[in-house]
Length: 259
Image 1 (cartoon, one colour):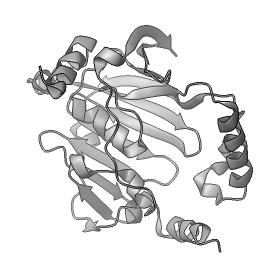
Image 2 (cartoon, helix red, strand yellow):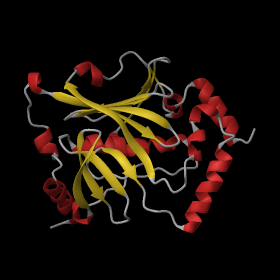
Image 3 (tube, one colour):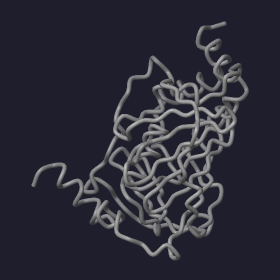
Image 4 (cartoon, helix red, strand yellow):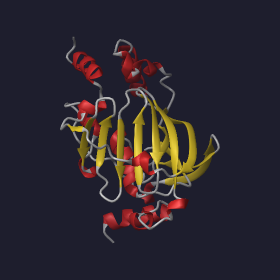
């Protein structure tokens, strides 16, 4: 069996619903979506809208929104306040491209055979607890059935590991002494950064391993409008235009230029 085929088979055994299953027709009156609020250390709180064949990510700090859904899985990043949209094919989408010095990359994908899976309940939500080979631990929603593209969108947006399911908590492995020293230095320098980027949260205890954590969740009836692509927006070829507002972008450029 080829490696790609083995990876696909592995995820099916893990319990992730594959594309063919997720694309199967679901009666409209029985469809549901999960609304999950997550805090990301250093960048603030995000709200995920997760369904069988669609995903929406809202940045509560700057108002930016990302939507992607079947059948095309086109990724739309837009700002309602500015009526501005950036679009991309999923396989080319990389939110880290906002920084020219960060190379484009694919979301790392781990084969199911390399994962250790357990179960845990967080704030009343049944979760899978997945331990990766490097001892990073990822928690996902146990009862969420979705196409693999849903987790890929989230992984590419945050440049996170991709385990075939959307992570709602991520805990890094213990830091080495050298890594602890680097984190302390980053936290110290981050205090003078622009306030809206929330660098002040980098003052967390360096021994704190959680980098993403669950704030709240609820399961509600599916709403088509939650996953609508924007209509009539001005198009831009630069993702920076929609990731940051005009004023925030200027502050960021000044910061990077050392002004």
